[in-house]
Structure formats: structure tokens, C-alpha cells
Amino acid sequence: MSQGLWDEHKENKTIEDSKAKVEQAVQRYLSLSPQPPESGFDYLYETLPKELHPQRDALINKAMRMQGGKHE
Image (tube, rainbow, N blue to C red; front, top):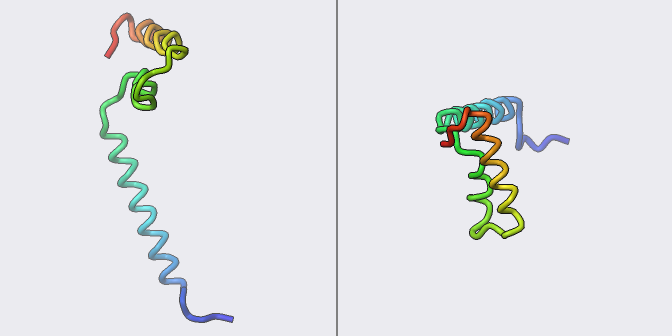
């Protein structure tokens, strides 16, 4: 039983609006400068647990090797 609350036009409009919002978010993301790999650690933890320091350091070292010794 239809109550007239939703119709094909509303459905199509919602889909179009959603696609546009996703595309805007994708373009914003793609316009960002690449972040160093260790930023995942830096932004996840206020204070990095001491157990994770070796992982973070290993990640930095690997990134430097992959970039020919340069680290951003």
C-alpha cells in the first residue's frame, strides 16, 4: 500500500545528489598532498605507545628505502 511518501523522482534525485557528494569528496581527497606513511601512527595516537615505536621506525625506514633515501 503506497502512502505517496516516496516516488521515483525523489529516488532519482537522492541518487544524483549522493553521487555528486561522493564525487566532491573524492576530488577533495585527490587534491590533498600525499602524507608520510607514519602519519597514520601520528594521527591515531596522542602519545604513541612505546611498543609501537619500532613499527613506526620500521615504516619510516622502509619508506626511505622505497624513495631512494628521501623522507617527506
